[in-house]
Length: 335
Ligand code: AOF
Ligand code: ZN
Image (cartoon, rainbow, N blue to C red):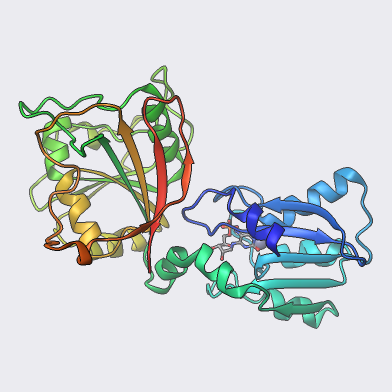
């Protein structure tokens, strides 16, 4: 289970939980490890089974150890419960149950098919690993990633308002990679008016990536007809939604109803503050440029925190430094 948990941590947080799986021999030898790389890709169990098949490993006496109960539904991919049974694996150990209406039930079904199933091993760690994902599921809302692009002293623009390209090419590419992974990208009215963003997912050469997010503007003011966000990447593209509210929870309810399971909040400081103040940010991706401005608006427009003891505290989970000019960190807020 420790190997499975370590593998899970290699995954990408978002619409799906991070999940790891380990195949173990009867004598306790670690045979193969797999993990889930994010919504739309193989589940951890299927990834581990694929490795076993490629290596020709016999699984007739193996145990599938997995950090989350094997799913029992066909979503973006097939049911892991059936894949495990078809592989002839006699034992499954999972850390925690899957509580979603769609996917749960794999453990009971496997047991009904004669597979020995146990659960609870390192359950606390497995729960903590996806605590924000479980919370989003419980609250029937999308998983929320907030992206902040700022200077070392937390500014998003200079005193004169100039703001474009605070962070460099590597951070921009990473930003577009996140856009293509999520179901929706959301900005507020301020960003709409100052940047007129298109909110499309593009390659560094400007060409559109294959998977485009829904484009959402959260603002009580109308979105002008000429706004770029209204014009989709293709002819007749209507994947734009106006959320006429200041309440982030109301915005998330509407997105949830539209089938959005992962939303990227991209700005600006007022919207960031509203989501943070409502404890509706599950993951923070921070792009920090090696610049100092000493003045200008902050990336978060005030959270009403007056004393150190009340600070919003986050768990570090650094994911790398692409390109060097803009360190990137993804962290989940402490629950
Ligand atoms: C597993 N193994 O590695 C993961 C599971 O739409 P899909 O097909 O990607 O299914 C997503 C759901 O499956 C997700 O909401 C969660 O309940 C479960 N995730 N289950 O057996 C995995 N990532
Ligand atoms: Zn599955």
